[in-house]
Length: 235
Image (cartoon, rainbow, N blue to C red; front, side, top):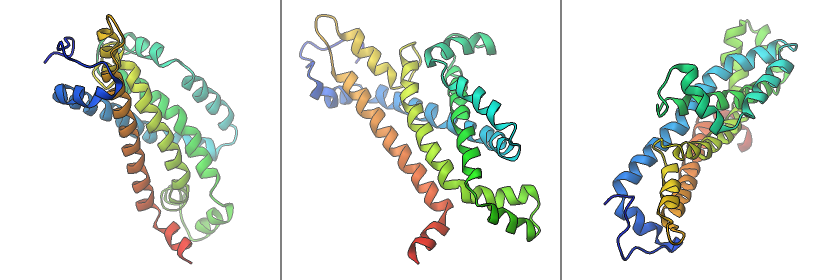
């Protein structure tokens, strides 16, 4: 069944979102998958970029203020404007699926640079000095001592970034890119004589569920990477 055509007996009640999902299950699940990878990949890319930038801002005090200013300004750019600017800047087509992960990677990096820098700053100086005294070189000290201790702060930032991405990705659906935002566009398109709520409510429900699941995944990763926290709590 086409999502652009309603059966004569279609209910416009917000509670009819489940029947709408069953009628368009294949399309909706495809959009859910698109929404998932568009939300997750930019956070991974953003973290990879933010780790060295955050380390640099933490290691050199003079770097921190300008870097935080630049990343803060990047995060204030409206998402719809960034989606429009990315294609000509990177030579992409107007509806290229790459424009969304590129734009969201910018947002994720902007958010996570401060998180990484502040997380590393939270590592006690005594711990850093002790690691240095034990013979750890800067890179080994960063990867084996400072970064593991900063994990709780960094994962807290990851939770914010990934939930924010789930919300921002939906905006791309309004410009024709496949993700759960298309459900909101469908709801608007089908609201001819009266508001048609099922696809809109379904989009909200799926976005919330996706955000909760991804948030739970980050929490699990946090627990796996910080077994020492459970050991300390058990004392």
